[in-house]
Image (cartoon, rainbow, N blue to C red; front, side):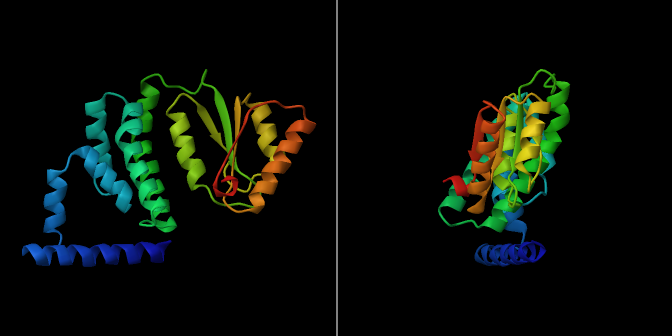
Amino acid sequence: PEATGHLRAKAQEILAAREAAGTGAKPGETQQAAAKAETAEERLQNALVKGRSEGVEADVMECYGKYGSAVNVIEGPLMAGMEKVGELFGSGKMFLPQVVKSAKIMKEAVAVLEPYMKSSGEQDSGRPVIVNATVKGDVHDIGKNITGIVLSCNGFNVIDLGVMVEKERILDEAVKNNAVIIGASGLITPSLFQMEGLCREMTRRHMDTPLFTGGATTS
């Protein structure tokens, strides 16, 4: 990941230098001028697409002042930025390491808003619980993490069990926390068999909690 980051940074340097050469400006001046001309929403979208954290906190807070609530900022400009990331990834113009960086920036932006979500009365108690996990044998969690962010912004208390989680633990935690939905994620093909095992274990336990599956292996 570090090497990928260095390569992306170097590529951005080269592009900025070419852009500056075409305008007669010094490298970096063109980008700075463009950033000043953009709205906070546009800067956030660019930060997500380019995987840059500079200025994100200030732009998030500017949007918070404009939109009036943390949820509105997440569902508005931040989700719009992630939709753009999805479009670029789907068309082959972005690759997995870049999407990972975008997800990291999204997580940082949401972290800025978390204190305001809690202070506005959006507490965990009383919210329906969803237990979310990447199944045993799989370490991929980008989609799970983004899904968790979206669900938490839409009234759910998301309990994220992480990656490589055994089916027994997923179901035990669901029972323990009175989950209304169980989320199981996986990218690689063997994860589909783990999900099938999870279904069988639910049947054995006579559990009828809705099971929400996702990831490349399911599609």
